[in-house]
Length: 146
Image (tube, rainbow, N blue to C red; front, side, top):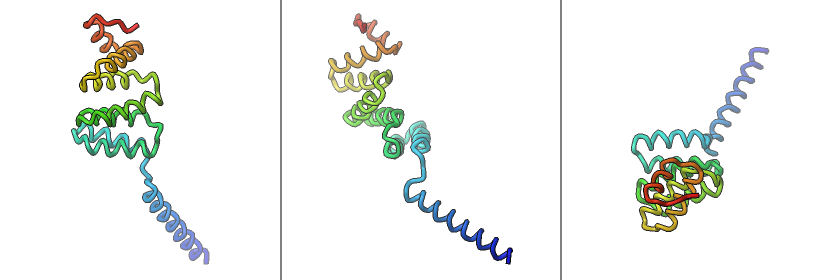
């Protein structure tokens, strides 16, 4: 009798575990951080589009994940998808106004597309936030950032 009861308990526990596992997969049991880490691996391997896809899943899971937006923006830049890159960097700056690399990167994009005024504005902000490379770049052109 006890043996039957234990078998039933294990059977029920197995069914509950299986149902939960299936449910997690349907609801996307992978975390934003796990998507982010996988995306980073793909980016390092040069598979930019797959990295973008995974960064997108990360921000869908966690809309406040600024590093995923930032890295996705950088990936868009590599693919010359400047509008998308700027949109992602704008999100980063909205969520984290002191994100120095977002200003420097967005400045580079504006520079690339010929919007010198916006590029200079972003470079100045990055320099004010302490980006030494941007400070040196502005200094070499005789431009103040203070």
